[in-house]
Structures are given as C-alpha cells and as structure tokens.
Length: 212
Length: 212
DNA sequence: AATGTAACTGAGCAATCGTTCAAATATATA
DNA sequence: TATATATTTGAACGATTGCTCAGTTACATT
Image (tube, rainbow over all chains, first blue to last red; front, side):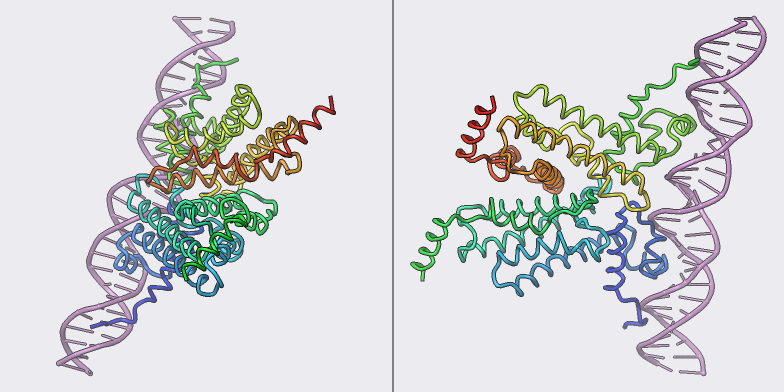
C-alpha cells in the first residue's frame, strides 16, 4: 500500500532536535525548521500536525537517545557506579563539544516553557523523571553489590545526581573560564553522599558473604 | 527644564522584569510589554530604544535587586555563614511563592539566549558572576572569623554554591512532588565542603587567640 | 491667556509568524 | 501505457511581530 519513497523520519527528527535543542522552542520558526529538515510545510504538517508536534517528537527522540546512552554505558562498564560516573562525565564534559547546546535539552525546555505550553512542558518533565528513574535503577544495582551504602535511599541519590548534573551544565554555560569539571565530578562521587565508610564497606562484604 | 509628569521608571522596569522573568525573552512580545507596563510603543522606544533595551534594563534591575538582597540579609544576620544559608534558603524555597518563575531570571536567560543575542547574553553572564563574587566576599568574611575552613578556596566554594542553587531551582521546576528542600540545604552546609572538623575549629580558635 | 516644547499616543508599516490547500509529482497497480 | 492514489510542493492566508512617526496632549514659561 506504500506509494512514495517518503522522507527518512529518524533523520528528520534528529535534525529537528538539533535545531530545537540549540535555539529553543520559541526562537525556532517553522521556516528555520523547513530548512533544517529539508521538508515543505505541507509535508511537515501531514506528518507532525503542528510546530508543537515536531517539538514533541524531538523531545521524545532526545529522551530515547539519553536512556539508550545510559544503557549503553552500563553495558560497557565494569560496575553500575562506574557507569553512573561515566555518564555524568559524558553529560557534563563531553557535551561541550559537538552538541547544539551544553544544556540538557529537557532542562532547557522546562526552563523556557510556561503553562501556555502545558502539554510540551509535561512531556519534558516526565522525560526528566524517566532519566532520573534510570539513575535510581543503577544505584539500586550498585547497592546490591555493596558499591553504595544500602542505608541511603536510591531515589534520593538519583535526585541528588540530577541536581548536580543540571547545576554543573548550567554553570558551564554561564562561565567563560575553564572549570575543573573532572575534579569536581570525582569529588561528587568520593565524598557525600556516595562515599562509603570503610567500616560500612566491611559490613556490606560480610552481608554478601553470608548471603551466599 | 522638566516638562511632564513622566512615568515612574522604577515601577515600569519592575513590571517589565516581572513579565520577562515569567515568559522569557522570546515569548514576551512588545504588545505584552505595553500592557504590563502601561506604556505606548512611542514612549517605550523613546526611553529604552528597543525590545532588547527593555530586557537589558530588566536584567540590570534584577541583578541590583539580588545583590541588595544579599547585603540586606548579611546586615540582618549574626554571621556571614548564617547569611549565606539564609540567602540560599530564600532563593530556593521562598522564591516558589510570589515570584514569576521559580528559576533565577539570570540563569533562565542564559539558558534561553544564543549568540544571536550576544549582548544580552553577556549582561546575564556578567550579572551571575557578580552574584557569585558576593558569595565569595561572604565566604572570605566567614573564613576570617573561623566559620569556614581557611584552607578552602573562597571562589571555589562560591562556585559550588552557585551550582547548588541553580541545580536545586531547576529541579524544583521539573518536579511536581514535594522535595525536602530545607533538609537538603541544611545538609549542604553541614557536610562537604562547608563542614569544619572539630579539630580544625580548635586550631582556628587558637590562631585567632594568638593573633590578638 | 498665549506660546514653546517635552512627553505621550496609537494607527499603521514591512516583515515574519504558524498554517492551509489546490495543484503538481511520483509510484503501485491494472 | 493508462489509471489511481500516496506524497510533495510552495504560493498565499490572516495574525502577529518589532518598530516608526505624524499628530496630540500636558505642562513651564512668558
């Protein structure tokens, strides 16, 4: 039943995401979008319905990419805690080269939009919560193998991470000077609240041994 | 030489700030602005020159207000460290009721604008740096009276504070649940990097005594 | 009261906004 | 090759954008 070669939807959404990520929702016009994704208005509206529709598709694309990245890093890492740290470093440091904005697109969107765009705002909020839940998963996994103190609440640690990542990325954007990001992230994981005291480490090891 | 009653510039800029703070730069139209500040286009352009001019005046107004607030809190506080903590709590917790956006207007601006608005972007960046320098001043003062470890770099602690405030305010905006902000801010100041070990506290006291 | 001028007004400009849709095009099927 | 239909095109719509400026108003000075 398919009749035409059609456009490559993935590539189109990727390009739209790039533009929206860089310029934000309001500063991106449909004309900008037409150029960026090489489609004419009629085709865009047939596929996405509206400017908001394209933006929503971009938010979903970005979210899917982020979660896939976390999973990919987890698989390539020796442990869940190492994976977390790798992801943070990637999100904060590597993102400065090659990405349209050093901000997280979801955070940038939540910062920009108001109640006038309730739907899009909720999509972005929910997406950030999904990413946070991925963190929680990794933290629980880390607690399971004694890499993180069992006493701490995994969801609180995940929230802590979100706050640190967002704060750092925003700070980078405000600052022209060079900031010792690697060191700061190392300290995040070496000190409160991820730090495990030596005594606690022993207890955890004992527990793991008795469990087996 | 003055001929007309003229408008109350302070009140006008305050109202403009309120609107820009809520909706952001791009989503605020000159028509919105005209209504908010009760001025007609001709008068606005005579006074501010352009939409950017009004926005710049708003950024400067907001900055001046922020720094005045820090100084005011310092004068009302028993110590510089208490002042810092009070300001953080005010910026993070109290701002949720009564302000146009729970984001910092300067951070929100830096997040939204791109190179296309270089001038405004630089104004916002510089303003954030000014606030950070106020933090640094308070921290140095706190170090002078032994409230904060002298070994730590004041500018690094100030940067740390900026990152925490920004991260927290952004997180609040993304989250619909209630977050234990008071507890989290308390922990900020009780643990790394503001914590002073008991032993260090004694040393500092000794130094202060020998200095006198 | 008459005059000069600083301050304000708002209709309206060109440009751009998000969006529509009749016409053109390209492919699958007959 | 002819027909049917899925897909794309881009001119153009009404609304809105940032902004201008000739005309009006309100006050200080004479």
